[in-house]
Length: 363
Image (cartoon, rainbow, N blue to C red; front, top):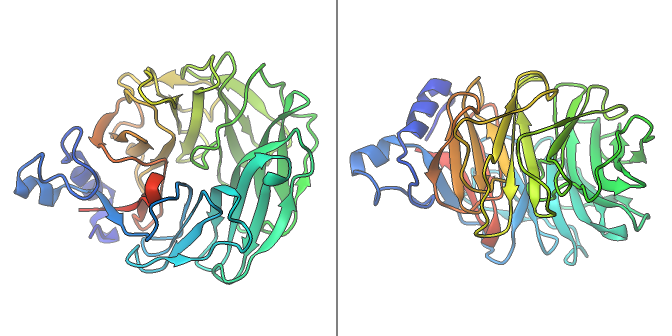
């Protein structure tokens, strides 16, 4: 197991030991010697008991506790590092598509269902998923909610694709028990055809008490919007990730502090080229520059390794890439399919995706 005592440097060294384009998360021994495989860190699949659900929502509390949310209204929770999973799906939600989950601990969590009109909803639990309360149901047929984020256990936001030419922002100040639509006077105009991607729960991400970023695609340019006041006013910047098609753009972002961030994306269609699929910023998203050696395939999720200023992981349906220099260059280390990824302070790094796949980073 990767322990906190090893520190970021040791975990990074173990990850770097993984050969390029290693085998799926069950092990890379077929690609390298047994000695090297034992020293390398990689994804270890956890049996969720389901194979017909795609988990695009992921919230890790620590190395032991994590929540996943996905298709067919499914929500699972583990408290033992993925050895066993409890199905805690909200009753009557089988027709919903959960695409994001935010958890405060092993008992309290908020999930977001996506879709047009009333299909977009939020639910909250305070007892580990034994009971749920629907706390928001979209009544505007023009709105389509994509992602959630929380600044702390009380204050959070959800975002919808543009309505009347501007992204719509929901706000909560009571942990998701109630929501209100924020005024759009501080929101820049959306580009024609522009929208968010509900692919990984990372199209709306926050860092610290007030900063939040919203990623976009489908329009002429892939853009990132930034708010420093919890979503009331926004500034927008272009990225180097190509867009110009409903299937292309910026799919997710991660910030290790309010200045340094990574954005990932590409073209989600299988077999389509995704050049310049990663970009980085050091000024809070005011400007973005392309990675010198970008992932060569579409990536939907990204996370920083805890306690590291330079190491991050990006995932997509065709594998996992690592950067050890803050996003300037990337190398593929795993070929397994994942849609979303996150890490906790105790090195609880988790990934989730299609066919009920959930994995944890382990040597």
